[in-house]
Length: 152
Image (cartoon, rainbow, N blue to C red):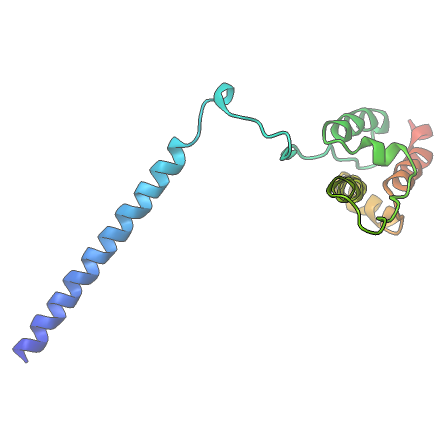
């Protein structure tokens, strides 16, 4: 019985030691993560990975003229305006495409999808239900323009 208690105490000590070690390593990792942040003017900006963290302006059916200006600026900032303004089809890839052609194809498809998603995210639920069947960002934009431009 005494030996059993001794081993239980040792296991408990090992457990506490392992816990404190784990706690110290987590804190150390957090400190390293925080120290990797630099002042804004010291950060390197990646030209490839730009993420728009700003939410699109919401449109609820009022103030269309203001929303249009804000939304166009939002789409331009995220390199999506071309997909809204123009009705273009992304041509299929040719046989044995180059890496540059594959990259261009992927970017064009993504631009069209992001523009459509941005417009869906920028309208109220009642407006969304009216545009959700439209296939392109250009169709959505033109529908909203036709419906709301003259109402103000």
